Amino acid sequence: MSVSVALIRKITEIEEPQLRDILLAILEEMERQRAQWEESITRREFLEFGKKMEESFRQVWNSINELTQAQKRTEERVEELAQAQKRTEERVEELAEAQKRTEKRVEELAEAQQESERRLTRLEKAVEDLAQAQKRTEEELQKLIKEHKETRSQLGGLAMTVGYRLEDEAFKALPRLLREDYKIEVKGRLKRQYVADRDGRLLEVNIFGHATKEGKPVVIIGEGKSQLSAKDINRFIQGKLKRFEGVFDDIFPVMVTYMISSPDVEDYANKKGIALYYSYDF
Image (tube, rainbow, N blue to C red; front, side):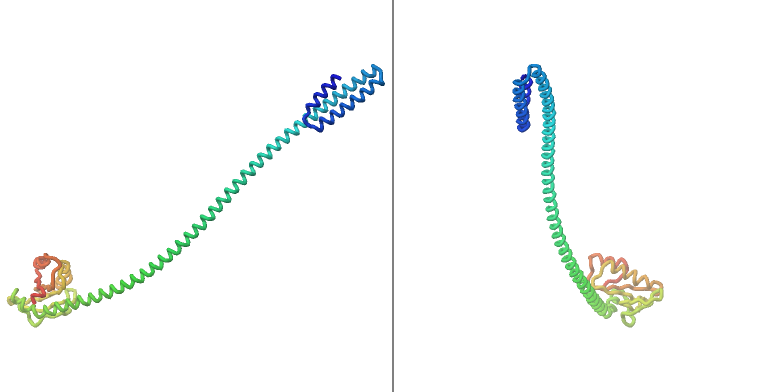
């Protein structure tokens, strides 16, 4: 009976209800059979039977232990699987969140791309407008250049006309002025003509004529400028007077103008040996 009590206590500690109930039922049936056998067998047989019963209980208990251990391992494995499943679910949840963030990022990138395309379209439109404006500007610039050329041509023609008008007046007045101021007598008349320089090349001379000074022959070479500057004087010397050196023995240079560009121009002309007359002297 002590083995049976120990077994009963062990069996009642089993957590699995079905296994516990089955073992208790087996134990109860064995106890019932033992009780029946006690009534019909001798003491010696009873002792032998008790030993067999104890051995059977021991084998049953070993089986119970093995089943209990197997059940425990199964439960541990189930717990491991449950934990693995939980981790898998957590990982799946993390992946799902990561996928959501990725989809959101892709959506943001797509929106940014669309905005970039819209800005690029606006930029292309602005560049096209700028190109059209540049084209119009260039057309206007070409028109202005053409008009400027025409204006310069007109001004050049006007300046030439003014210059010729000034020189025409000088042709009439210079013989008297040169006679009064420098005792120069003009022979014939002053005129505008082409004269061969020392290299034999023809050069236009605006005021040209032959004269005498104190009985000696001189050649009058002159030029008119509407507004005379020191640069004009230098150009006259280098471009005209120098080129006739050696052609004529004695040159008398003359310049006529409406006005000078600065107060020192008249003194500069005098230092260079050039006779200067103004239109109001005529």
